Image 1 (cartoon, rainbow, N blue to C red):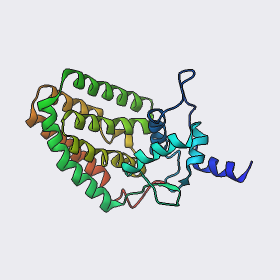
Image 2: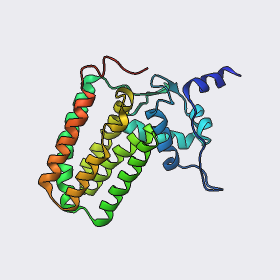
Image 3: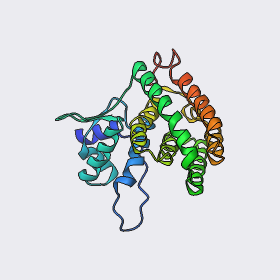
Image 4: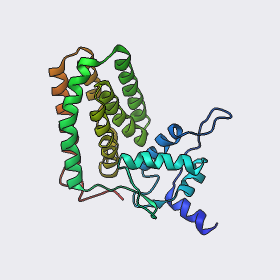
Length: 238
């Protein structure tokens, strides 16, 4: 085995094969969730530095596709891109985590109020489908996808608010929160209980802004309690 192959083996662990339609080349939309899931499940080591070439070989796609996926993850602050250096998975500390959660709290209270005013039946149905997929991943102990889908719930809720700046802002906070959960919370599949998501959707569907705000506040309280526990950052999983 070559040194290059050994390096790839140390960085990428048991990545599942792609399931694609015959003749269809993998797109950014195909690769993004798989790469993000691999990061969340630490099948790509948190401290590892990887190249476009190594990722392209692993996922069987061109460097241009990988470059666009990395750009998206960089915009979401999940990975760090620096000129003339290899990409690296981010590792937020306790202070960064506190600041992220504070920003999310201020933003998501407004988002859920706006969602109550603008949600359509189709959008509500989409939220319920996300919750069902999240629950299915939890039942199957698929840690990475469960965390990612939980974050997508919040991003979809932001899209329903019909406020582009708020949605864009959350898009830079929620994926990074997902990374923090994966890196520091041992029981990540329970951090963002699907039952709490379902209750929020019920309130949004009923256009009950008061209840929706109360439920979202409680939901974020639970997340903050788990992630800012004094032992969380003292005993980071290896």
